[in-house]
Image 1 (tube, helix red, strand yellow):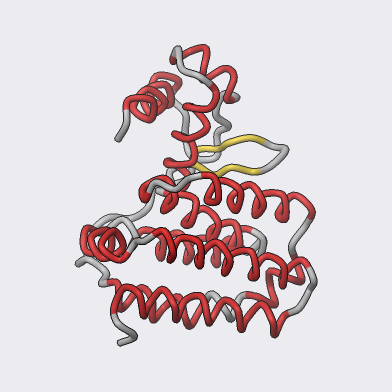
Image 2 (image 1 turned 90 degrees about the horizontal axis):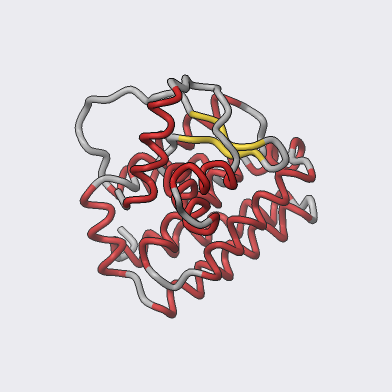
Length: 212
């Protein structure tokens, strides 16, 4: 955990915030921690990717409910198999329920990924983009399922595989995939969105596991 993120976590603890409580604004957090708004924004993105906070465009950042601990590590193969079952299947719910602020959040995550060539930073925005899709369903159970799936990305085995397979060319391909997914959603193209998501996840599986 970087120093700015630690300061934000400390600020949350000192304020006694509970799940559902709104965090101070980026400007306020910057003033309280002595950090720039850009640094605060990056740290909030890290906490969001970890499922520790929830960010809503136009409303603010809120402390997320803690997730249950325990159980064995989820393998990358299990995670990707589950994603292939779930993420294409929720496209109708996304396209039916998505609002303007959901499209704005998708764009924020897309732009964040495009601006960061570093593996760790790109991985955070990658996770945030996929979570923004679940959030666009406005179905709390689907969001919780998405958070569980994102938890698997924090497992050591996943991180090692992803880092070893990460290249500049693959990063650009993932960016193109994400843009295609978002475009299909904005165009209300259910079948197209399902297909590009399936292709994207199969690509990720091939890059990580050799297509097993």
